[in-house]
Length: 220
Image (cartoon, rainbow, N blue to C red; front, side):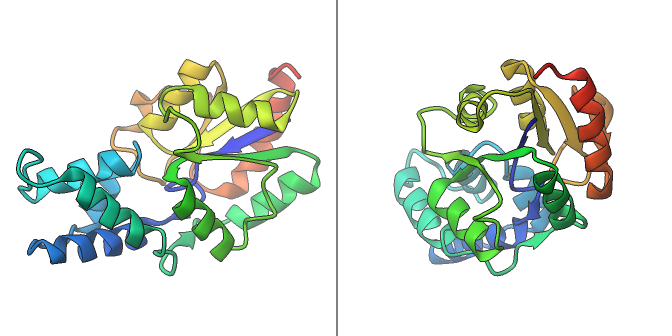
């Protein structure tokens, strides 16, 4: 079976790194950095949207301050921000078990490609995934379904389970017509009950059992 994962808020908590990159950019503009709460609430729809939210939160009007310039500065710092990210408990063990069981693993993230590859390499995940789609690799981003469809296509024939943590991931799965397992400890803004999902879990120890259950109900 194909198992496709989101990255930020699902496999890793990267908010402290993103917060640091944002702080460096805002400092150059004479503005205070973001809190971790703000940072987590702005993550999910890609770096461009994150920058727009960051600018709005610090009173930077896009009519008078160049979003493109701030975005480029943020991306340059974001690509190097990997030192503070941590795995959620149980992630590495779950990935190891699933791969050893013969499942094909994919990654589908709105995180820009350079930044995504940098953090994956830093955290030793570069040999784990059979397919990878990140922000900017195609002309679409989640919650539009094309990124998830491309990842599934690259994985090959087989039923698919998508694993994510947020409203964006839930909507992506719905639009793609793919079953969805919600990790409840990530960056979601709404209660679990308001997000469409087929399974929900709060620790990755539970994921192999969900995959086994999904394998019985998802057509190959």
